[in-house]
Amino acid sequence: MDPAATRTTGHKARNGALLFGAASLVTLLGLLLPHEANVDTGSLIIVVAGSAALALVLLVAGSRLNDVGYTVVLGLGTVLISLAAVSNGERSGGAAGYDELYYLWVVFYAAYYLRRRTLALQVLLIAVSYGVTLVLIDPGPIATSRWLTVIGLVAGSAVVVRLLSEHIEQLMAELDEAASTDRLTGLANRRALEEHYLREAARAARTGESIALVLLDLNRFKHINDLYGHAAGDKALIGVAERMRSVLRTTDVAARVGGDEFILLLPNSDAENATAVAERLAESAAERYAGITPVGFCFGVAAAEAGAESLDDLMRRADQELYVKKRARYSGASTTTPLSAPLGRR
Image (tube, rainbow, N blue to C red; front, side, top):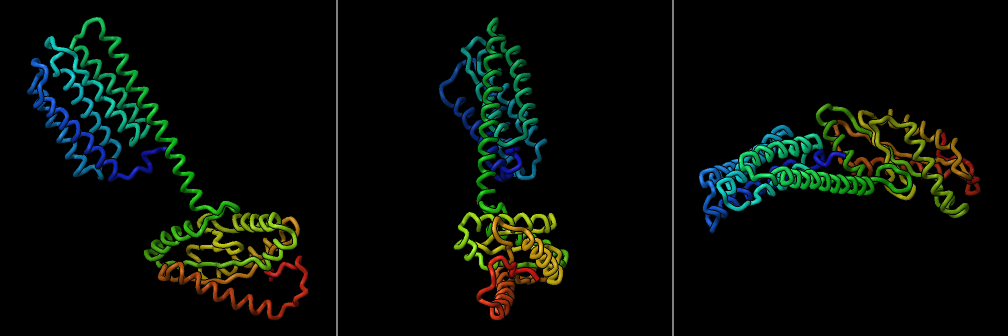
């Protein structure tokens, strides 16, 4: 899973601007406070201005940058860090300033926000840039071990941050799925249904298509639980869900919104088509034995042209039709009708 796919562009731009703004401020403070006498002040001023400019670019245009744009920005940041390392006075005989540790800022950001390929490219750029930096500084025989230490730290940090971010992203995706899925049947829950309806209503408003909704209620579900136990009731619900998946199109949405209540959301469908789908599902569900008894149900249908109605309005109209059907059915049914009779079948 790619963490970059779910990070908001606004956060990525804002945090990148804060990162480069902090780099500019830290470098400026380094010049204003007591520092090594041999530093190249002119080059460090370029680092201050360049970091501030990158911060401004991200703040103003960061939301419009793609992955390539961020790669360029971070690449320029790596070059500025290398320039700071060359200019800290070590090349002129001063003590090492260890400005190269700021490469970690770049790699942490890339590991969290950008793609794996972009991250690998940043690590490679840092390795090359730091190699050139050490050649310019010429620290003597420790150059190789110093390069290996810094690049090892950069690469290891990139891997650790990336793995942690992907693990967190996976956990967030699992939590989001759990929050939008009915645990027993695996169908959508009320929250997911509302989100699907908002998207479909917006699309229907553009295309002028109708959206149909079917409200289904299992017949005498309480009797199944009372006579055969909740395990049988669960099997009945799971069986109905399986039949829904086999009958519906990939664009349709099936949701469980109550104990024995289900809703079918059928984009680009009218009431007639929705009724045909519900009747086909009723036949399929009645033929399937849920452990002990066939499952039947009643249903109500409502449709909205061009997504003009709210989900609650559609559900209310479908529920009214369902109520009328159930009252008509049970008012003429014998109270001794055997449980095995699939009451939802026509």
